[in-house]
Length: 349
Ligand SMILES: NC(=O)c1ccc[n+]([C@@H]2O[C@H](COP(=O)([O-])OP(=O)(O)OC[C@H]3O[C@@H](n4cnc5c(N)ncnc54)[C@H](O)[C@@H]3O)[C@@H](O)[C@H]2O)c1
Image 1 (spheres, protein in one colour):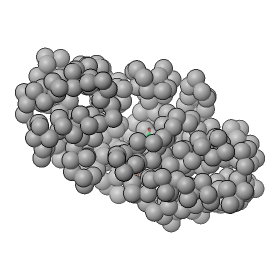
Image 2 (image 1 turned 90 degrees about the vertical axis):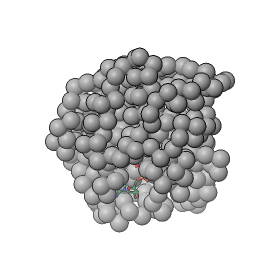
Image 3 (image 1 turned 45 degrees about the horizontal axis):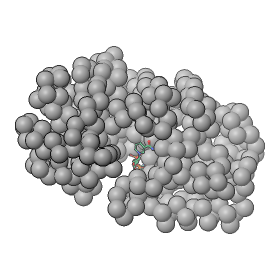
């Protein structure tokens, strides 16, 4: 088990990561938020698997809590669910000195974080991620969101948690595809920031899960500390995401986020090769294939370019591509948005 300290301009907090980290929940609550009431947000899957574990800890420590259970899945990450949870907290008399607890994957974490950031103009938040993706990505860094009809994550806030408890044992019950989605993000950290992590992942994440989760959090922490509000370097965490989001949207979200990011990373590697920046397509495809990702692309350059151009990250006619330079290092490569199509046409997708 390891404690990772995160110091952002808006807040400092600890992430406790490793097998059995949930045992540190109560001491961590006492240190970071004190004795207050807890408003737990979770989903029906997580609730049915782990409610006894969580509630047992709260009861034994004398914490009073209320719980709101949403239906699992991205479709719940909307303004209606957000407001239903806010109304629930208000009807239960949650006050400004109380605390929201996010217990679940990234959907629960994003919703709970947003709710904590706006309830009575902002209350404390504890993240207990239960998917690999939420452990290595969404629970750390303070981005919160709900989806709007016009697109994913279009309304949200920056709201750092007071503590994150990242117990890798929760991953044991994940469906294979959900676990693999998280693997795409861990591999991403290896490609853009850490060749040693990349090498270790080559031997299978099951042989280094605690290390991989912990290292991913440290890498994300280092980026977020320098660019909390995502105006500069934090963009590199979008490696594979510009093309990945485009594929997700084109597939009407039938291709999962991680599967789409995996395809997106390979496209980015091919673009880097076409631009003479690097030739890592073989290496990046190799590791992703070994994790069982399908790297085929069912869409044309034209379809991907137009879908990517409608993405929220396109600003003033410019698009920033994140391209691998070597394993463990990447570059932010701005291009005029209207040159994306010709660039994609130059590579075999
Ligand atoms: N805020 C950020 O910085 C950030 C970063 C990346 C992704 N996200 C968001 O995260 C979301 C995706 O997160 P996700 O992949 O965790 O999806 P998710 O929260 O939908 O969880 C995936 C599935 O796993 C189930 N599940 C959760 N924990 C489980 C466990 N321990 N055992 C068995 N089943 C379990 C859930 O019920 C759900 O069905 C997206 O909405 C995405 O936009 C946010």
